[in-house]
Image 1 (cartoon, rainbow, N blue to C red):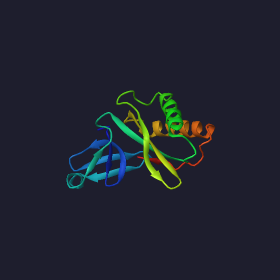
Image 2: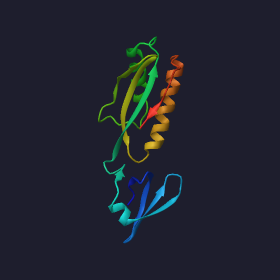
Image 3: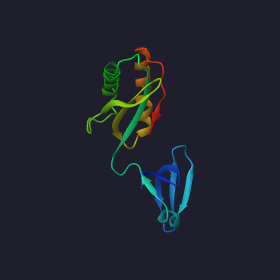
Image 4: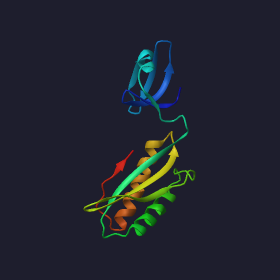
Length: 143
């Protein structure tokens, strides 16, 4: 109980495990009652069992901006967020090339509980720092 899970595409926290069913409270405060038979026959993704989760954020950057400059800016942004764990280390690099720019990927680790809050905080910090630096072509991908 208390673990964050994804069951049949629904994400929430396990609040009770009974003999015949399990109760999940979604993050938007819906109660889901799942028969245990369905749990036995389907994939259950446990998001919090390991204690931490990796957050992946990708940004498209125009070729007019140097990758070193952007990576340094992102590293500074990430290091200023206290929710980002020091271990495993932050990874930032050029992930893909596209016709109109390149994709920089940021991979950070955060506590599993509070993942969404950490994601919102980090995205806000990064977007504000990128705007200040004049990087406006942003296509954000988070997982």
